[in-house]
Length: 156
Image 1 (cartoon, rainbow, N blue to C red):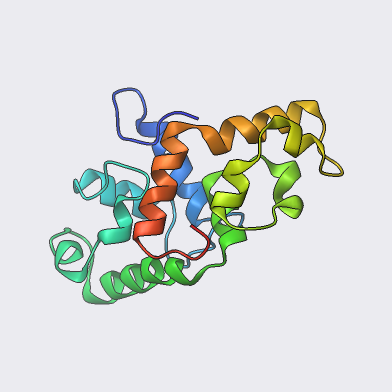
Image 2: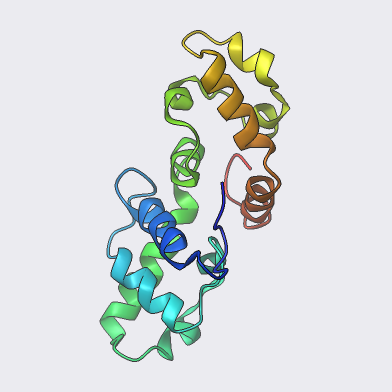
């Protein structure tokens, strides 16, 4: 649970996180892939995992190589992420995989579970329970959840 920001040495991992977020296993954002994220990073528009939530047409207009059509598609795709269901957002954030079918409730419900509460859920063993507890209690992940809550993303 590192490299949520464009810190030295984190360039590739942040780019991989963003590619996962926009891929079919994440938010399934059309027209947004690794190359698009790289262009946005190189343009100085993204320095953190969720910086793209606030991008607008004026900011995209300043990017060399993005024509009107490309800008419109990228902006529409990024804005469509706001309508994705909570469970899809959890996958995009990288919640440990074995639990995805066992995630009931909103963010506050999931954060409130400790390791013992996770263990009480059918199909979650000690290792996964510890991973889930660590994930939901991680300060950086909680900061991301706060950003998503402020952005009005359902479930946060």
